[in-house]
Amino acid sequence: MFSAISSYIFAVEGEPDAATSSTSSSLPTPLNSSSSPSTTTEQEPTPTPAPMVKSKRLRVTIGGNRVDVEIANVNDPARPTEIDTDKFVGRVLVRIRDFDGITSDGAPPNQGTEYFAGRSRRFAIQIEGRFKEREGAAPYDADEIQFGSDFDHLVDFPRTAFNAGMKVATWVDPATFYEETPPSGRPYIMSPYAACMNTLAAWPAPSRAKDAVVIHAGARKQKEPEVEAGSEDVVPVEKLGGKHHSSRHLIRYWRFLGFKTDPQLQSFLTNEAPHILVEAPSSPTRPGLVHSASLGVIPRTNSPDSLSQSLGTSTPTSSTGPSFASGSPASSRPSTPKPEKRATPEKKASGSSFGFGSMLNALGGGPAPVIPIRPEDVTTADHLRAPEPSTKVGVSTKLDEQLGAWRFADPGLDPVEDNSFVFIEKSVPTPQRRKHFVNVKNRKDFKFHPDVVYATSFFTTFANLNTFDLSIGPVNMSLVPYFHDMPIRYSLRSTRLEEFEGKMEEEVFATIAFQLVDVAQ
Figure 1 (cartoon, helix red, strand yellow):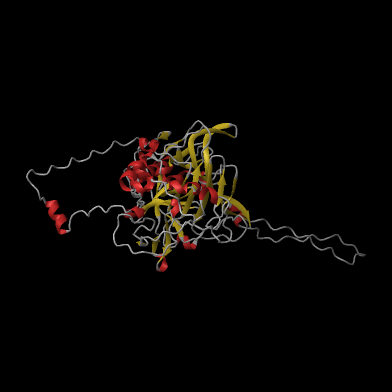
Figure 2 (figure 1 turned 120 degrees about the vertical axis):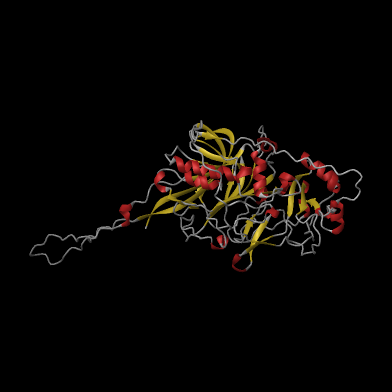
């Protein structure tokens, strides 16, 4: 939803050249040589080159900043773009429905048919990476890391459309804000990274597996049959399944909670899993654990891009929101909402030893009893079967030591939401995670650990990036006429400043740029 307003604001260079859509009706005229009676041969006519016909095609580039970029392998899950700088190490994968743009090797474009089957989204950005530890620099908190769109200069975009787009964006993600005249001179629309992404998950870096606490996703559940060992992982994914891809299977996994030494984990470990606090040698053969069955098939709802809220992955897709107020300041930042008052529970009547609730419990109609966590439900990541490096052609293993193996080379696999590392033991739905990170204190309290791989995805249904046509409810428009010299650019960055091209700007970890460029035919 955040991308709706980004699509309003950021487009691509120039309108298509109408003059190149037609050619002259006259054929090239041959050049006749001068002749004389003694001449017996005639010079061959010199052909006039036909006018070059150009068309606009989409070019997608990714890099560690807006200058050092490379052409992305769109819709090729086996070849994500790799980034390794002094601040960030990660992988970025871009998917675009019906992609017909420029490829890195000149091969025909991959249209992403399998990934987009049964879905309404038009494009998706998938990022996984670590914010590196640097000497003298404190770990980043969730108030510092942002994701959004930035552009080279202010654009004279229709104010009414801008205001409407911002209202929709802030309705879905209240933490969204913008600056038209920042000190860097580069206007932007941003939101905290932990709040705005459609999915958020995390797992430990391979070097920290020994003290990374994981809990089985089926903990506290009953009647789970044993399954084949070897499919245990700490990365939450779903897989295409069912006829016509009408459903997706959430593959059984282990939830990452944090490291043994994390203060927020101490109470949980002491009360629920004290065995984890006792040092125990890890298995040198790393056997797969035999545990509970798959979490099952998740049926599609009326909104194909929403998973069951019970799995913590639902994302609202409605574009209806509050009424749009007129006027728009040069910047906007969300205010922290006041905490809701909790209702005071009624006191139980004196002398009652068997109330209505007790009767319901006795009859089986009350709240289910809390199932204790079994010791085998909590372990450390080094006891899980390590994922094997992909054998699919083209998959790089260069960053495996820092990030672990790339799990998404199969186009049928997709990351899903699991924010247990934020809320400990449970994962909440996306709207609740967003609401949590609207609060500034919550953002400042959460630290991005340098030894944790954070995985996110971001997608929208509103923009056709092949043509830069926008469609939100009754609004249907082309964005091309409003921009002539800049791409749509999404940036993962921090609020800390560094010198770049001679001036102070926000630190950048990764950029993804979409631009229509002239291509000769």
